[in-house]
Structures are given as C-alpha cells and as structure tokens.
Image (cartoon, rainbow, N blue to C red; front, side, top):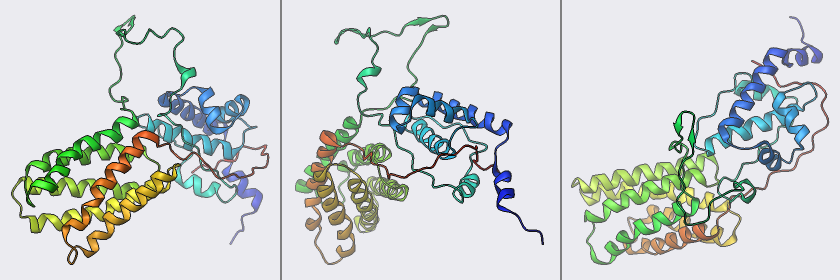
Length: 325
C-alpha cells in the first residue's frame, strides 16, 4: 500500500487557476446579491481594502482562512437580504472538512441590516414628508423588488403584541375551546415566524421556534373546525415546549440583560408548564401571557444582535490552499 506524504496532500488540495477564478466569480456574485458595498463588508470583517480585494480575487497572496470566512459571511448576508445565495462549487461542505485539517477556520460575522446606515443614505434625499417616486430608466420606471422587501425588526416585534390582545381578552371572558380568538392567534404566530428568522440563535433553536409555530397554527385550525378542546390542548402544550426552547436560547444570545432575564423566565415557565399540566390548573399558565408581552416590548425597544466573535490568531499564509472536491 502506498503512503501519501504531507506535501502530496497539500498539493492535492491546492486550487488551480480555473478553480480560483471560479471561486472569485462566485464570491463577487454573492456580494452583488447581498446589496452590500465593499466598504461595509470590510468594516464588518475588520479587513483592509487590500485584504478584502485579495480574498475576493482569491489570488495567490490571500489567506485561505480569509476566503472561507468571506464565503460564509456573504452567504449569510444574501440570506438576510431575502435572496438565495449563488452556490459555491469549489468551497463545498466536503472541502470545508478537509480545510479544517490544516487551518483554524474563523466564524464569520453577520451584517446588521436592521441598524440604520446614515453614510449609505443618498446625499440628495428628498425632504421628509414628500412623496418619493421611482426614477425612470431606459426601460421605464424601476419598481422596488418585493422579494427583498422586509419590515423593520421593531415592526415585527410590535405586530405580535397587537395580535395577542384578543387572546388576552379571551382568557378573562371566554370558555376553553371558544373559536374567535383563534383567528388572530393564528396570525399572531405567523408574525413570530418572521421574527424567528431575524433573531440570533442556534439553528436547532430556530427549528424549535418554527416547530412551535406549526403546532400552534395547527391547534388554532383544529379549534376553528370543532375539534374537541381535550384533543387540541395537548398539541398546543407540545408546541409550548418548543416555544420555551426558542425563547430561552434567542434571549440568551441578546446583548441586553433585561431581555435575557425576561426571556429566560418566560421560556422556562411556558415550556415547564406542559410537563405539569395534568396536575396544575390552566390559570398557572396565564402569567406567561403578560411575560411574553413584556418580552416582545423589550425586543421592539432595545434588541440588538450579539455581534461578538471569538478571537483567533492566524499566521500569514503565502499559498492558496482551500481544498477542492
């Protein structure tokens, strides 16, 4: 059996000119899809303009770690902008596993599309209060791309508060299984689905949040269609366990201590009750309704994503070793 030397492995993982050019084109395509400027990207990644250009071009002087970090940053930025990233044909999942054998890859930062960018505003912005009409082009008027339109984070946090009010009223005046609060309750949960995608949390915690939405929407439809309360209620309790997981984890990733405290208490109370619902009366769950309103209010007023990234040291690399399939 032949042995493979270390130098042989390195040569096998070095990109050729075709692969470097293809990767550079894919990075630039995703930069275009993200809508970000090179200045914004360099600021987020703490790169100098020359270092960013080197990574975008995938030239012989760039650091492989920089290229992988830029790839992950742009892929996430395109998703956050509401678009589908262009696929990477060289920097694949298999290539990442091989690259980790040689390099300590860094976690990519995430661009904050929520925070205002005063420097990015056009210098000739019209006075506030005047209507803004699309400018004509050679092909006619250009209209906004509705696929990338996204409400503000504050609006997404306020919407559930408004839609939850009928449910709060129903707790005081309605009997279990009544239908009318379920209509606004369904839309309450659907708006939270948009919020889940915008808050920092591990992917598995976000999956728990989406599971909560699915089960609670299902429960609402079951109630509207005359399914007995004794059948629909346990389904909702199962969703509350997933809700507790997402609320606790997304709160833990927030910068503000008040969000972490209220969110942790809300999630634990909401999820834990499902395990004791057979012995605890339903009113024990009611305080979570006010807690979640307070939590959404804190999100609307002060939430900011946690931008802290682990610090790693990276030695200079003079060869482009990124691994190819």
